[in-house]
Length: 302
Ligand code: PSU
Ligand code: MN
Image 1: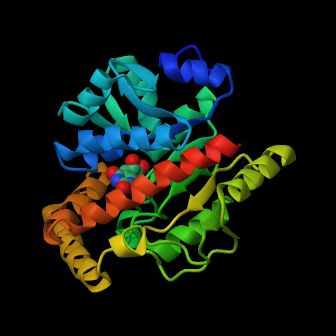
Image 2 (image 1 turned 30 degrees about the vertical axis):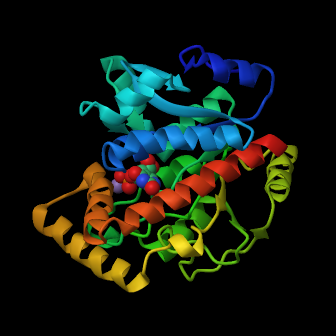
């Protein structure tokens, strides 16, 4: 049952009531992960991809202290253009509601709200995870612990390549978060089709993913997320050497300029985009597009 605190858009409410497929979309990627004005066009495009895939899109954000599940056009515009829109992880939700604040939701906050609303499938680009400087900063995205206690399927291109991927995979194993590779036995590398790391389970169709979700529901758990890891198409991936070089530069700069906490991820994504002449942006977009569409297909067969 949807919580009364949640504001469901007309379309999302109707779809959930009549048990039609719904796909949750996060808003941090729109507000803080993509350059303006392209971000708004992308947000709209992702919603159409979900529709074309046969599901209703539910973009999630907090506006004036109310959690919205599904945004009207003007609300989506506000998330994409208003510089006052903050970045909200799940721990920020209660303070933001109490303060009447507005913010874009990260994977952790989006998954939390989506699950409260009764949405079973969620699409994004790359998840947060363990950062490369973890041993000095202890920077590990709150996405991981939230996904460890939320039963939702997250379609993504793996975790962001700015992270320590082997360490993140280890954490996901410890936390009991399931992972299936979509058409691959390698964990994707976000901007790259492969991180080189193996995944234990491979599926090939939306039907097969739906069967995993049904099996989890039939078991009554575990109450953890299922990561459906779909690689970016090969022709859209970034050149690995370029990727590694510009990332090393951007990481050094983070250190020099004292960029910490919530600002790290947006900073690195922005620097990568500038230093690859926009190629990382194209790879990022190709990944999220594919994920929005696949999530819709999974929701539709569920
Ligand atoms: N994936 C993208 N772009 C993004 C993000 C993910 O392609 O901007 C966002 C997600 O909202 C994710 C967040 O939850 O980055 C992680 O931030 P942090 O590392 O600060 O937890
Ligand atoms: Mn962090």
